[in-house]
Image (cartoon, rainbow, N blue to C red):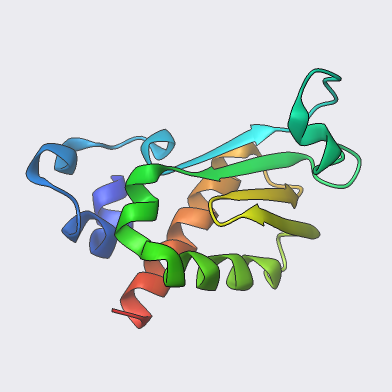
Length: 120
């Protein structure tokens, strides 16, 4: 199933040129959080507490808007697949989850879809 079929409301807000995007990384990026002493985010997101850094891309941020980004953060904080959650910025989250990177990114995107449907 394509992303467009999974999150049609998000796609309905994209430009014609963006309609062909079918990779999660264009919307949500979940990266493994590892200890890197040169990384400024280690101060905020201890890898022992947050095994992923989740970035909401500018494209998805623009579709959601600030109010819905806040709703997304609040919703994710209470999901059973997330053990620890910290929103350090409206589009950057620390997450501890047993899901893999792609599964987590897809769950976040699906939650954004749900929020956009409910709050349009």
